[in-house]
Length: 446
Image 1 (cartoon, rainbow, N blue to C red):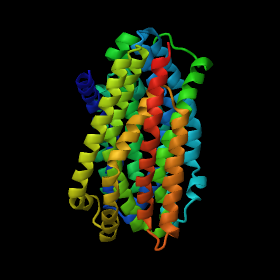
Image 2 (image 1 turned 90 degrees about the vertical axis):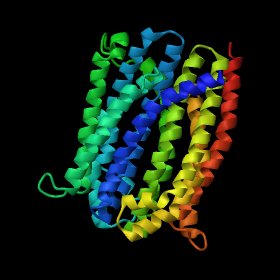
Image 3 (image 1 turned 135 degrees about the horizontal axis):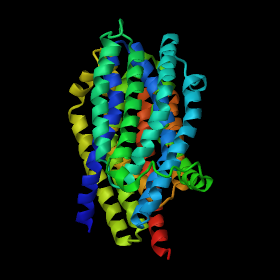
Image 4 (image 1 turned 60 degrees about the vertical axis):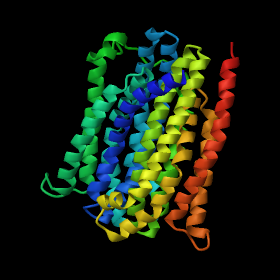
């Protein structure tokens, strides 16, 4: 059964990985393009991109509650109820987009946390103000994303994601660097491309739901339901801790750009490059975790404890081994990789000094990611949120700030990355025993 679980996870995770790499590749394109514009534009996308990703991932985390609920229903052979869950997810996505847009168009509270150059701040505000208008599309698309993954149908996500990345690469290059609209727009050009791609992806997902195989089977747009509080309550019960966990985890890395803004644009830009590489590598364990959560949710819904345990073991082994290998490859190929991002010697020096940290923590990051998503499959989300808050904000951010500025001698931006390594070790050490308890509790429930 373990071998079967491994094969199943690989088959499910591969399309998710391509889709996730395409999604994160949008930010990589922005970084690579703006690295050839100016360090100010690169610093702006480092700070603005971090804020945008934090908002999106927090709100998306709430909507991802659609996945374990749909997986449970599918595993329990209650497919007639899944379309209603998707419809309620869409309603919730539209509601959540309102505070998200307000925050992105008025980012003063977030920007006030850092002492940054006036020119950089102006570019950050432009970038976020434009990206705000793609938020409804992004949240609806991610609801569709959760629905497809829960049913084990991720290939459409791979297709939409890959096409979006290719189109964004062309548009960002032309708008930001080549002056297709009369002048090189820099960070604004990248933002315009992101908005267009976001709506295009959302409309593509809607068309697939209407006319594709999932639409023919589940008819998600038929018998449309108005908002229903009992379903919203369950989505929010599971999803709000998931959203807060996402926020805590992503901000433990993205807020570093704000906290080190006073160290200068080259430091922020170098950090941005390494953060991009780290995010790319993270897509592998994350894809395996999403696949594991879906398969495990179906096994739990079907009340099949043997399949559930085999799925968890397969997810942990695959993620740990593959992430460790990627960490080693990164260490060996760091120099040419960083050179491809920027021509600035100062930025390259900062980035090279940070690569070792992301090579080291891959193993622990993989374990805590799989454990966290397995707990979501069991609908256990509140305590993992507390664990991740302590690890990522308490150990990672606060510990990083102390190492960066107060340790003697101060470690600078490297202090944050060292604290991140320690925080991931703590997270894995706390979440794995919690997962073992969740397994025992599920198996003892009649």
